[in-house]
Amino acid sequence: MNLTWSDNGTILTITHDGLEEGTNYTFRVIYYRDLAGNVGRGAVSAFRSAEAAAEEKGVVGGRVVNENGMPIGGARVEADTGEWTVTDENGNFTLEFTPGHRTINIIVNGTIIKTIEVDVEAGGR
Image (cartoon, rainbow, N blue to C red; front, side, top):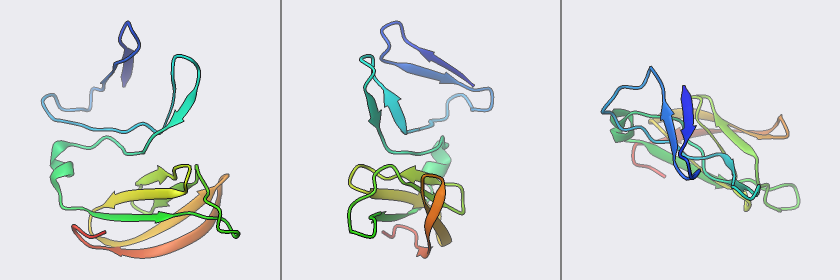
């Protein structure tokens, strides 16, 4: 995979021999650093083909909080299917899955703090 920034640093071009030309792929940013050196956070997703994006998915969302009810930003929320995301500063997250039974781990500082089981339905939330 090759990553190339445009001359003005605003467009990132990604090339990969395994990606099919003419197929749309999407991704979202996990963390980034702007030109001033400030770090920001975005939502997470992996590369996916247009065909995969067209599949009917279900969505699981929630909020991760500590024992005092305070939100935990930056926690990793990881499913047994390999999909994962990072909670925002308010502890919120969403993940898309193909339908089925899923195990989701909440991970803080490399330690699983909670495991939940969910049944995901197509188009469900």
